[in-house]
Image 1: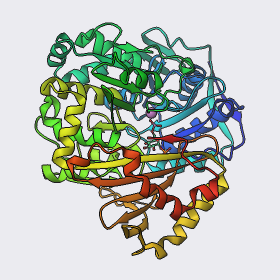
Image 2: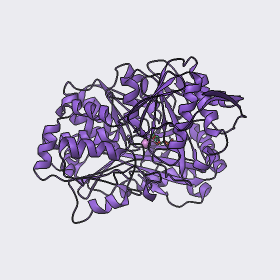
Image 3: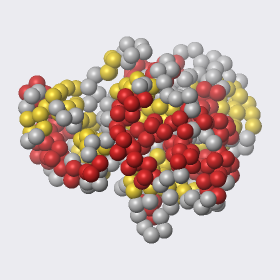
Image 4: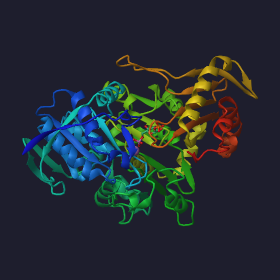
Length: 543
Ligand code: VG1
Ligand code: CO
């Protein structure tokens, strides 16, 4: 077998975003596009001789072709072993676990997460480091830099590797180990949760409706929930990973998981309804005719963690992204544990987890996780909810309402304005940034500005500084607004506006969320000139 050195020229658009490089499939299919980026990663990593790489993805269109190219490139670059999930499948949290367990140098995950797939959809690639967590900003910037000067890449000339049969084979001087994507993960989950107790919950007639949205979580959820725990067959639906997600948009929110939402608001609703995204790191929780916002879910899981075997000793600390609601902070203060505020993106939790400063962390974008891996984990969050429900034997709604009564309710919404022209979006943020000094101490109706800044984060572990991480405007009564542009979209720009108000009075916990935040929405529009600049009167997606 022959190592080829292929001449190439840089692509100017290979700067990774919030979670890796995400583009249209058609962009990835351009000659050498994928190979350029993969070689840029390998060059940045330095000495890869004899090292182990983990490889897998969410099964979307182009995953298998990409896996074959990466296998041959890994062999040509001197890796000693690639561990790949059968059929090139590995969920994002599953991949994080395999990297950690095998002390691999790192892993490549082939996914565009919750973005649609298929030939006209999106593809993506992210690198997780040896701790099983997303490459740091410093690393991804180095990948990008390298991609801008690349002149050639190395690839082995070889027939297609069989990635469907379990076992070890040889590719040049490199071993290819095809593993069951689910087995190790199932063992880890069993060590954290009380499967017998959850089994008893199902025995008592409790019904779960788990929509895997034809993403990669299906096989994991079926094995763990239906086979290991004994939930009735059919609990997990859309359970087969499909290259185009069966035409679904595998984004677990109220807009895109519409079948689940319809079912959970209908007359035959289950006790718990959940959906997960393409790569299995996001989840949405619904009770019977009751939606649990992700920020609330994180706070509730934190408040109840000690009910679950894996967290019985308590949590050392918690973290949330700045734009996530403050519901978590109220819980942390009561528990007397540290809490941190990070920029958006899981990579900022890695150091805190590695340093043992936090046990749980999460984001408003349907992500929660713990120190069991270094990525967010959808199925983990569902099992945690199930274990808590099995102990408390109350409905999802009862648990949330009691939580609000105890801690107050952080009324919260995220408004996404999608498909904005890049220049319009950049100008909006720039103008907002310029207006910050004039905002301090100004009043808008009953809201007086107490702080207006551009969020900057200093990592408490390594001291690295990340600036321009979102504009935040905090009001004297604890309400707030935040604005940032998405770093995961593939067409135009998406403006995310985050709105939050604290409501301590239980008599008002039933109030309609949109109504409770209507005034803040007005103020956001006034401060940022959203409708005037974008021409949009209302958001495209509300979370
Ligand atoms: C979004 C979310 C962020 C999340 C990221 C990756 O980023 O807001 O919280 O970490 O997606 O999640 P952005 O830059 O578009 O706001 V995933 O499941 O797409 O890997
Ligand atoms: Co995801």
